Each structure stands twice: as C-alpha cells, then as structure tokens.
Length: 81
Image 1 (tube, rainbow, N blue to C red):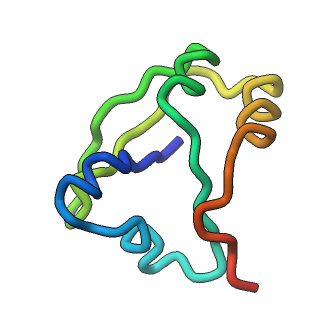
Image 2 (image 1 turned 45 degrees about the horizontal axis):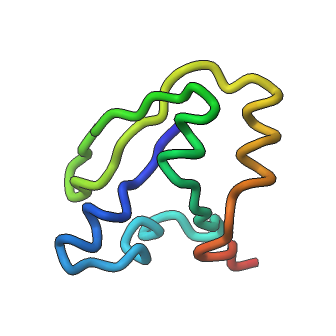
Image 3 (image 1 turned 45 degrees about the vertical axis):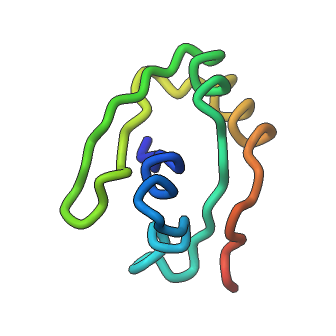
C-alpha cells in the first residue's frame, strides 16, 4: 500500500496537494503511523522520482485490516467527482 509521509512533505515546505498530481478522480485520506503499527503494518521509505515522501506499508491487508483502515481513515482531499 502506497503511503506518503506528511512530515517529509511539510518539512520541505510542501503541501499534501502535490501527491494528487496525476490522480484525477481520486481522493486522499490520512492514517497515523500508530494506526498502521496497531494493525502490524510496517512502513518503509520508498522514494519515487519527484516524490521523496513516498513510502510503502507492508504486511498482509486482511479483511479486518482493510475494514479498520476504512473506518479510521480521515478525508484530507475528497475525490472530485
């Protein structure tokens, strides 16, 4: 699961809006590192060209984990429909 580290974006003086470039019709939600760890998800930096804040959340996304993430997630940028 791709994730973006908000602290990296903000430490660079950036805005979370930048992660939505090229993703028209999608939205952005927020989960905390604690919430990921609570569900036994490890996360690792995985910078991609032009986006040093990119990371990945690893480990199985069981039905229980997916439901937890769906309930816990907070909209940052809702999808534009």
